[in-house]
Image 1 (cartoon, helix red, strand yellow):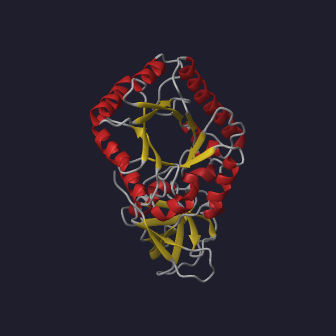
Image 2 (cartoon, one colour):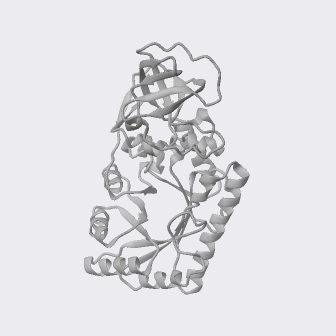
Image 3 (cartoon, helix red, strand yellow):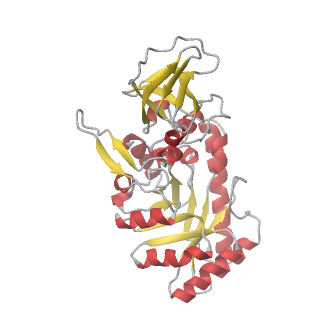
Length: 360
């Protein structure tokens, strides 16, 4: 985990741009201390509960990177009043008016970034939409605050290799810079130009005009990231420890006690070149067991078998044997648990236990 953290921090830092890690993957105060600059930020979150928990840990600079709704603005204001520079994101005039009205009502200038659609992946306003400037003007009316623009190259999860990710990273950068220029040309301030995804952050070459990069799953990495060439299997820092509870030898199955309640139902590798089922199987020390995957899951049962098409002999794994399963999607798998059992870097040291927070 620390190797992953240092790798991206060094890469983005060497380009003179701030890194704003996303805590939606780890949701942990202990990891935040290690992930964030000085442990205090800047940070990105996906829920207001994350923002509140991180505020308790001393994080003071946060973007809530999910489109804000009017019902959440009093809670945003409370977090800000407690000493956190919490900014929200939005992509409509309706949301901008709600932020402006709440700012006036509460007597507090709530900062907002305009979310941009750089690749058709999800939310965000189109780059040529005239509403971009009108949203900026609503936020710049004296009560709220236009903080900047933000975009996320979600399509980067659907392509393979550094060259393809670098191309999408440049597309992402150009979109954000173009939008910022449009706002500035309209006489509006745009101090923050925020881009990011784990694939593009690791591949981007040019950060001209960008003030910060966001990424999240790189803290742990997972099989989806390995499958698109962002990391190697050995970089995956998160695994689920499971125990063999039985066999169906005529079917070539090994049964474990880690079903979808432990692994999640995420099948993010299903459309990749290599389908990893519900996870790759390792021995207790983390060495990959060749061609073994979690083929099927029930609520509390995992079925381990050879990858389809394989013909190797199953390893001898009697009842009670312990295995590690590498997850498809680190965020989804971690969300099934309330803590991490942490193997420290000191040889022979006992496990540490770090709590995590779920909920909204």
